[in-house]
Amino acid sequence: MSNTSSDIDLVNGCSNNERAAQGRLYKQYYTSMMSICMRYTHNEDDAIEVLHNGFLKVFKNIHRFDPLKAGLYTWIRSIMIHSAIDYIRQNAKHRKWVEIEYAAEPYVDSEAVSKLNVQEILRLVRKLPPASRAVFNLYIMEGYTHREIGQMMGISEGTSKWHLSEARRMMQKFLTTLQAV
Image 1: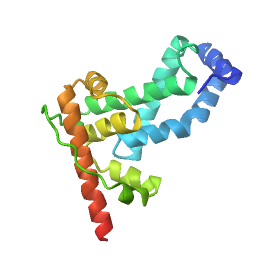
Image 2: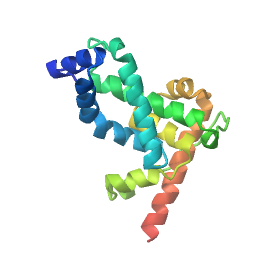
Image 3: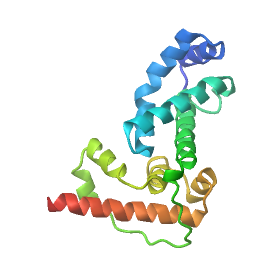
């Protein structure tokens, strides 16, 4: 996504701490960033907390935004993803890392997935344990490698692979249960 002149105006306004520009940026990106936060959290309250922490980081670091390196959407999205990972790491109740070096790839029935709407898929993803959900989102939805995920989350590459495998196994179980209904 390329930067428009209105994106640059928003960035300049936010850099100057203009409340109106900050409000416009928040409104413009709220929906898309909230959907990202929802994928990483268990409920809407947690997603809102991640979203607000992310926007605080955006406003605090807006002067670092470089339109030659990324689009504004991509830059904000990256901050939101890192905010979600920070949230997962900070909440001990979410911390369940399993060190493992090998993980088999479970089969996920693509026909079953194609019959679900976005809300149903999100509901299933949100049933995953937090660490597995984060790895699943980072790998499947965001396209990060296991090495990159390991570095972001402070886990080994093998642990990232295990969490992805576990997420896929659980998703297959969820899908099988739905098909039986």
